[in-house]
Every structure is written in C-alpha cells, then in structure tokens.
Image (cartoon, rainbow, N blue to C red; front, side):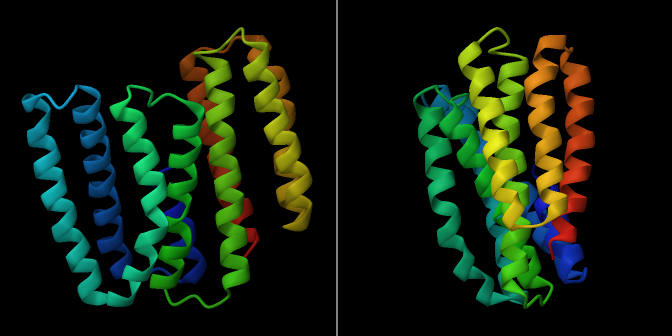
Length: 223
C-alpha cells in the first residue's frame, strides 16, 4: 500500500532521480504518521513522543528537499489532509482498526500515484486518475477482505461487506478497462470463497502480494 502507488505513478510517467527523493519523503512520512498514531493511542505518554519528533523532523527535511526540486508539488498537500486527520483521530480514540480509518488510509496512500506521475512529467490526467482509482479500489477492498480473514473471521456482516464491495468495484471497473473488471471479478470470487477456507495470516499475506502485483499491472494498463 505504501510502495505500489508511488511505483505505478513513477513508471507510468517515466522514472526520474527525483522520484527517489519523493520515496524517501513518503516512507519517512509514513513512519511519522505511524509514530504519531501510537503516541495518540497511548494517551500522549512521553516515552512515545521521541519517535514522533525524530520522524517528524526527518519528514520535514525530506519534504523540503522534494519542494526544492518541484515546489509546485505543494498543491497536492491539501488532498492528504482528510486521510491524515481521519487516521489520527481514530488512533486518539483507540479505534484505528475501524473500517473507516482503514479505508481512508488506503485511499490516501493511493493519492501518491498522481503525485509521482506529476513529478515524472506525466500529462494524461484522465489515465492517471484511472490508475489511482484501480489502486484505491484494490487497497480499500483489502481492508474489508483482510478484516474478514482475521479479526472478523466468522462475521457474516463483514463477509457480506467484503463481497459486496468487490462486486460493486467489478461493475464500476467496466468503465476503466476490461482488465480491471476481470481483476475485480476474480477478487470478488476470492472474497466470497477464501474466508471459508480459513487461511493462516501467512497464507493471507502471500495472497495479498499476488493481488498487489496484479493490481499494479492492471493500473499501468489503464494509462
């Protein structure tokens, strides 16, 4: 979820050395976000504050380095505000495992695809947003699917949400490309059947690696 959107955006527009700067900023930003979430979840205990300070400072430095190369990328910042706020508020409420928080974080991460595409000089914005939509739908779907596999294994409600989300995504992807529609049809079948097989977390993780690779390939085909 962290690497795939940036990779897709960079490959689709043409990889440049500045994408490395963006990758460093993005990774440090995630570490800062995660550390801040833990700090808030701990009710702001002092021993959790140092990682927030260190990763926050490192993220700021990396962000300034990116802006030194492409200051116009700052216009993308407002789009990340809502996912950040939703995730941090959920952590403060000790509800970071909630579906709303997970989906918001997943969709927020996929915004990095058009940012990386912009950095690479891409100009076909219709295709770029389709690319982000494919990844966003995939990673949002994993929130429902993985929760049904592990934390809500025997929940009919979560099973229905997972299957329903993927089925609706499959229909929506008909407007993107046949490949995208086929991918989400397969994911719908997976969401319906695999939870009944009771896979281990390791098996579920391997399945997600395969699914992510396929989603990346389909997203690139949409460009």
